[in-house]
Length: 178
Image (tube, rainbow, N blue to C red; front, side, top):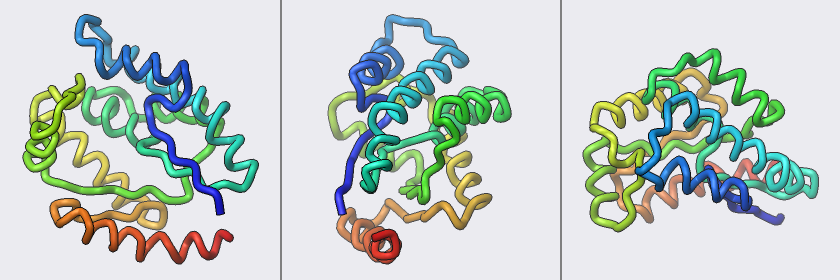
């Protein structure tokens, strides 16, 4: 079984350029609506050039972030209309939905402290704690509302424990798919 690992935003030359604009350029005044559209432009390119072809080849695709991130960050975090975002997401993904979404849940303060210990803050990580609380709650609500599609893990535990737990849940699903 071949596995393709990718990430959002990015994963294509266009997506990488959009990633720089949205995440790393603090000299641009990117509005919430523009941010949502840029994220979804990167997503559309990724689906068309990377994800859909890999799925057609029978590969398993693991993507660090996908459509739920728009609902969490631009919806809950930025306050954009969820229905409008869902329409943009549907167009960007051509209706493609993940078979499974893994949520590594962590209290905001712990996550920010971990990130602060490393280099490389981006525009999102520099947001106020209240923003991150809204994003976290949005992810948790998505997981509660779609329990058959989401696997949730307490990421405050040791990384190797979390990894083992994830593998115990994912491995049987991969065996069914092969």
